Length: 226
Ligand code: SF4
Image (cartoon, rainbow, N blue to C red; front, side, top):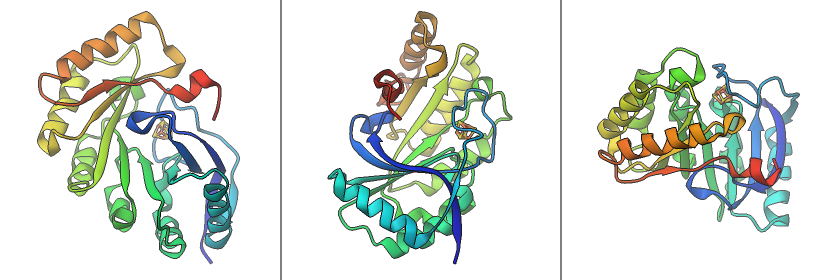
C-alpha cells in the first residue's frame, strides 16, 4: 500500500487568506520542490501514513471539532499527489470541503487531484521575496487548470519584494481570470510599519486592475497557535 510522508495532522484555525478563522483539520505533507527564504516548514520530522491510517485520524478530528474543512498543506502536498488521490477517493468526504494549499508549480500533479478538491489556495512565488527562480510559466499553467473552481491567489511579500514582481503578478491574474481574489500576505517574520505600508501600496496598485485584493497577515502567528 502507498504511504505518504506527513509531518503533522492536527486541528486548528485557518490563519491565512479569505477563510481565516474557520476551523480546519490540517494534514501537513513533508518536503517541498522549492526553497523559499522565508519558509517556516522546512526540515520538520515526518511520519509515514498509509491511506487507511490517515482517513481514520482525519475523520476522527473532523468529528471531534465539528469541522467541515480539511486542509492539505505542506511543504508542497502535490509532491505526493498519487497518495492524495487514493486518500480522497477512498475517504469519500461528504460534508467536508477539501482545501488544497499549494505553491502552484506542479500543474501536472494537480491534474490528478483537481476533481477531488473544493478550494484551492495558489501561492504565487515572487522571486524577489523567495530568492528562488521565478515560476511565472508554471503558475500560468496551474491557474488555467483552476477555471471554474473556488480559487484564490496568495503572495507573500517581504521588504525585498520589488514593484516589478507585483506588476507581473497582476498581469498573470488579469490574464488567467481577474475575478480570482488576491491576498497579499506580509512575511510574518518581518512585520514592520515599512512592510505593512509596502503591502498597502501594492494593494492600491493591484486594485486598479483586479476587483478583490486584500492584505491579510498570518493570523495564527498572532494567536500563537499552529
Ligand atoms: S513553497 Fe511553501 S513549503 Fe515550499 S519552501 Fe516555499 S514556503 Fe516553504
